[in-house]
Amino acid sequence: ATVSLSGGYSHAVLVSLDGAPEPRIAPAVAVLASWTAGGAFRTDELVVTLAANTNGSALASWALTLDFNASVLAYTRATFSSGFTSTSLDASVAGTLALVAPGLAEGSAGEQGDSVLLATVTFAVLASAAEGLAL
Image (tube, rainbow, N blue to C red):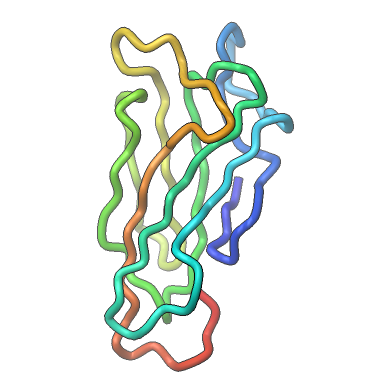
């Protein structure tokens, strides 16, 4: 799935729902990328929260990509929800982060709800960013 910093829901997130033998595309699961409203200024920090609405199912794993404007933002760090294990982030492609949580943390029965925290990603607004560019 692609979650754009312009915001909105993605309806094609690779997830493994409780009881499903294989990860699958689950159109009933939505991911929302949210951040503080308003503009960002050069050298500001922009924190993006990624959360899922599991539509009543327990989320056992997930994978998504987060696309951003690399001429405006630089990825600085990410933290993942403690409900998942073996999490990873690939930032090797400019303007794209690939985030993966392939399993549940020990003792977790799966995350469920309308706003299940997946990860928090922090960016720095580049000092060289031109005014008026989309994030």
